Length: 73
Image (cartoon, rainbow, N blue to C red; front, top):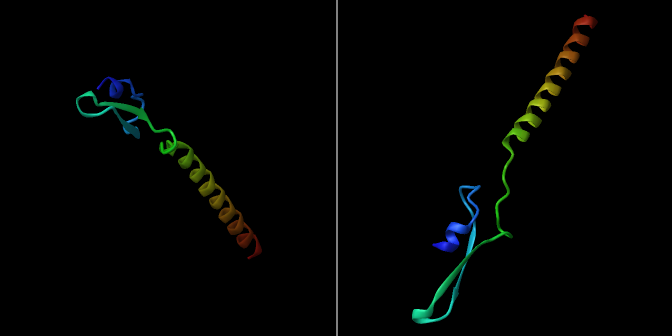
């Protein structure tokens, strides 16, 4: 429990490695965060911003194409 409480609590899920040390009644467990398999945090705001910019760009291109069609006839 001491090792578990020492883990960072900044995320809901933290991958851990549990290592068994010793034998029988002298068994001890070591718990540590697993850095290699740690999932990356998804930045949803950055994704939303990028999608918004892309949609705005598409909208502007369509408006431009529509204005050219209107001017032509």
